[in-house]
Image (cartoon, rainbow, N blue to C red; front, side, top):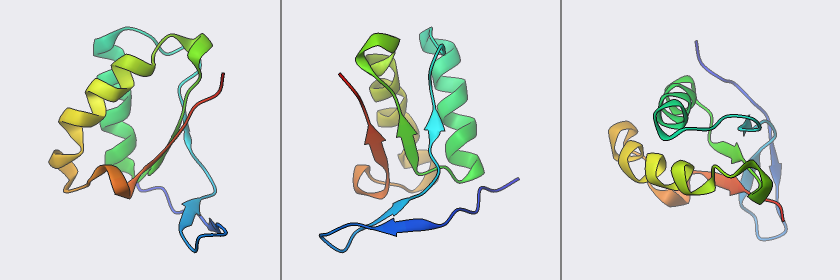
Length: 83
């Protein structure tokens, strides 16, 4: 299964995926790691989180380890967080 999404062109010319992987109510470092792993494998390149989800730190750790697995860099993905 692969995620095929349209994208939006930002003012700086960068294309941002129209659909992102939501992480509301996903907690626990092992669960976060598994969700991010499966999301990247499926083709998600945008991840949505928020401070009130209390999972931002685990998402960061998972991305640091998983991006190289999929030959991605931090510049290849969008992380959206809210206060």
